[in-house]
Image (cartoon, rainbow, N blue to C red; front, side):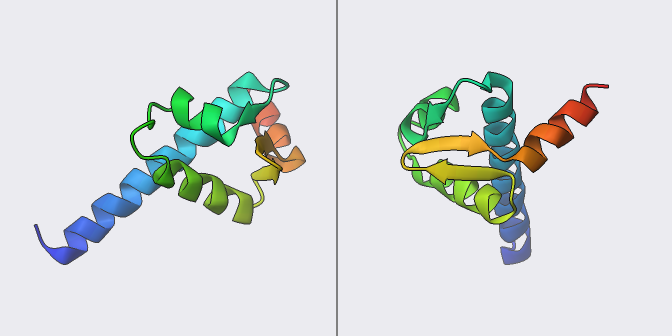
Length: 86
């Protein structure tokens, strides 16, 4: 596999995990999840680092926020989710 293909597939995997994490947090809202629970929900118990990276990147994008160990959707993410349901 060429290096550019590997980078692209890694980026695609990261994006898919970010999407899954955000969808899970939004689906369970207003219930809250700890990062550990989110890792389990996404089936990543063997390696939590990709979920931690996804949460970090979604937080940087303004879609999730952390409160101690809890992972919460931002108001922007909740509003977007609300608009998609219409």
